Image 1 (cartoon, rainbow, N blue to C red):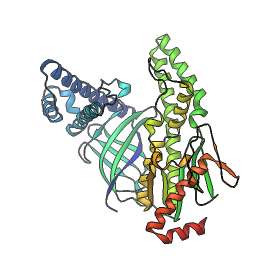
Image 2 (image 1 turned 60 degrees about the vertical axis):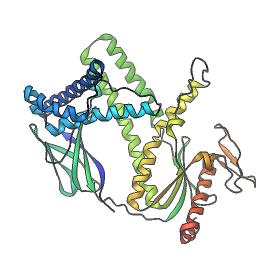
Image 3 (image 1 turned 180 degrees about the vertical axis):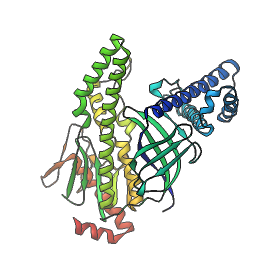
Image 4 (image 1 turned 45 degrees about the vertical axis):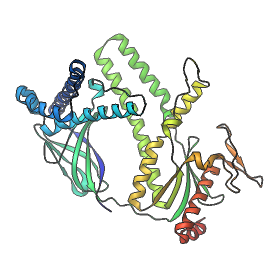
Length: 409
């Protein structure tokens, strides 16, 4: 397998002096970002001139010569910040051309600017990993060395890095060029139906189903999150800066830990799936369409808006985009195959898994009656249809896989 880039995250443990210096450097990067954004806006407003990334890199040399404060920033690191702004404008124009809601790049407050990056290892930063890439030491130019805790699954060559400030402290995100590999212990074919009622439903043959429960992390934390939000609202009314800062920190910490639980579940489930399967067939989910608002407009107001908003929250709580992304990446490392089908063409949730007849079902219809009278869940029927597609693919390309799958079932 050729070298690929993977991210490895370590938690940093700076001293109080180092933490203050990190904050200062981050504020300088934020000021540079905002100044570069203002330059682009004013140049176009007053002269109709577009400022490019290369133009701003040349201006950076002059800024560093005139303002000694910016000599504390590594020159390559400052270019990473300017490149971040350039990408924001590229995405803005891309969305304008596509007719989407563009979202013009905006000035960054402290809470909206999480950190800064470095372009290449050895220029402004150096990471020295511990034995087996477990923990390590980060050396930053002008700030000195600090401990880093974490572990890389696949060691490699450090390419670049980002330092990110969160509610739980500072983190180092390394990009590593490596040759990742995962052991695969099974050769089964699996039909996989993602869902909200059940996080994942697998089919390995007729009536051979396996289900992964949906932990519903957001529902479990909803009351605590609302209480934290109320505390922040009360602190903002009182205009007490220390109390407000503490309330914001507690709310951000709870939200981050909720996100970490989702991420942990996604990694665990996708790792097990690719370890046990040679081929997984699932739907190519259009997440943006699935989570679109039902609000409508003044001419055509939507219906069941509150119910749809609740469904959207439940869908996003399962992180389907991250699930599919991790599934593809891990399958590549394990030598497994992922087949994404178009649900509008194959209609797995509307199709009978035995005779292939298509019958439209509403979202409230959660069961499927088979021709012999037996009843299975809607998700099981969909997974079964996806397994049938996998069998057809295997029969066309690898007949021996069908035999092994039938034996396993």
